[in-house]
Amino acid sequence: MCGIIGYTGNDNAKEIIINSLSALEYRGYDSAGMSLFTDNGISTVKTQGRVSELRKKASVHFPENTFCGIGHTRWATHGKPSETNAHPHGTDNVMIVHNGIIENYKELKKEFDDSLFYSDTDTEVIAKILDKEYEETHDPIKSIINTHKRLKGSYALGIIFSDIPGTVFALRKDSPLLIGTGENGMFIASDISAFLKHTNKYIRLEDGDTAMITKDSVRIFDTDGNEKSVKHETAQRNADEIQKGGFSHFMLKEIFEEPDVMKDTFSSITKDFLPDFSETISDDSFFADIGTIHIVACGTALHAGLMGKYFIEKLAKTPVTTETAGEFRYSEPILRANDMAIIISQSGETADSLAALRMLNEKNIRTLSVVNTQGSTIAEESEKVIYTLAGREIAVASTKAFNVQCEVLFILALKIALVKNTLTSDETKNILHSFSTVFSNSIPSILKNTAPFEKAAKILSECNNAFFIGRGYDNYLGQEASLKLKEITYIHSEAYAASELKHGTISLIEDGTPVIAIATDKKFFEKMRSNIEEVKSRGAVIISVCCEDADIIKEISDCVITLPSEPSYCHPFSAATAIQLLAYYTALEMGRDIDKPRNLAKSVTVE
Ligand code: F6R
Image (tube, rainbow, N blue to C red; front, side, top):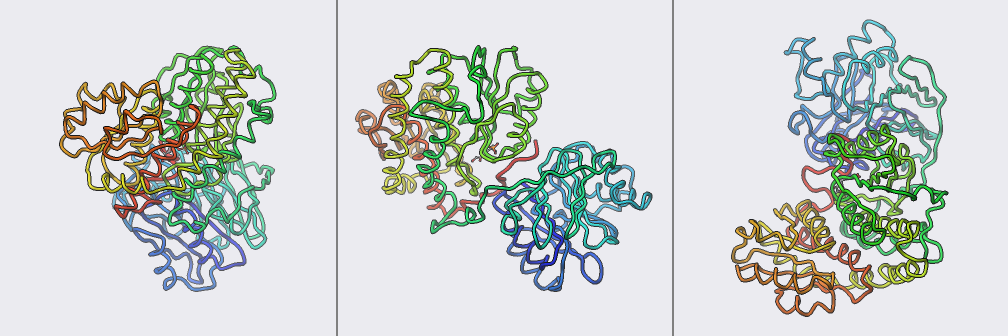
């Protein structure tokens, strides 16, 4: 999604802003731009495409002695990706960068002559209104607050006024915005990675607040224009996390980090092989008398939620609904006083997941979030938070975060099972003991031999359509596998419960169509074999992802990815790693832009 950076300070603003835009590239974008104060007023440069192109343009366009400005990476929502639609937008008096969506922009535009607009964006009208307000009030803060009161939607704004050189203003509503406080200057950014190289000290702008920053001061105002006190925070993150560390892609690096991050997460929520969430949930009563659990999330996190449903229902015998946040928030879910909601999010900023959380909070449902990003909005606004310790995920396609989300949900299921007495302590200890081999043995052994993935990737890279089939949790893994493949290879694929294919979709199977059969749950081997026979007899090429002892699956497969022999609760996790590698090597074979696939954004902060 779009990224915002603003800087004012003693250093070279041109270099700082360009480098910060590069650090924001992982979020996904299609154009970029920046405005800087120069001796001749504000000057702007934009480009469609990559930040590297903007860097070239900026190097000739701007002088070296710039000290203040704003920059943006745009992920198109209103108006196609183009140089004209790229941010910053503005007038002779004011330039702005915007993340989010202005829902009433059409209505607001009616106040101005159509010919005054040069772009198709919903952003340009904000600048027009702000300019008008500033002309009337001659007060930047008042004009921003008045503008804010007229806007509907979600937005984070970075603003500069041509007659106030050296000052950057910012406004936030429902879209994240941080202020970085460094020794050599101040920053505004949608994401801490934009300024982490310069400082790990930051202030979180709250909804509705306006900030005014100069090179050595930060002032924050509420919607009535009253100045507020500021709360300084320090990020744990390390700028080195943004390096590929010898891997050809962040995605591969992140898959290889899975054993370590799963081990770290395990240590943070277990003690002596029993679940231990006491650091964030001090009282077991939080888990007592749960009616239904509603899991709400989007994309890959939603698939982790499906795995969570499987674990919780199986181990804790508690009913679970799993729903995509964008539907949940507008549905009329049946919620009872003793229900619990679990919101899963890597970024902690996904707009739909956040809106669903707010809806649940309003209805007084106990909320627990499983979040990877410390201090993110979802984490802050949930009643309780469990952090997944995946570390920074840069590749757009989520991998290690998925594994640790599933791990947390698995251990949470064991916790609820203990509180509900559906498992004894000894049984739980045994389960967790065997589970720990997944990060000490199983996943490391998969990572040692990537040859089977490369072989399967050759088959997949030559197709236009592929199907994933599985039963039980393997069906949920198939959905994640299909999403991963689509995201980074652009091959069309669909995932089905293996029993379901013959109810219509089997008509699409023809000679050479790859069907990837995920078969890691022993109880389904025979059923899966029959389903595989059904598609094989219609010409499908079978790639199976299965356990060592799944001979009846292997013998009818054209290509086999074998998971190590391991205790049963390990299979979903090692299979998750396997399907990620399958997508990765297929995209590699096809020469795709693996870390930054087309049209996608890392953090989806608009609905
Ligand atoms: C897919 C992917 C997305 C995210 C989804 C939710 O690889 O990364 O489907 O899982 O946008 O994002 P978070 O987890 O940040 O809420």
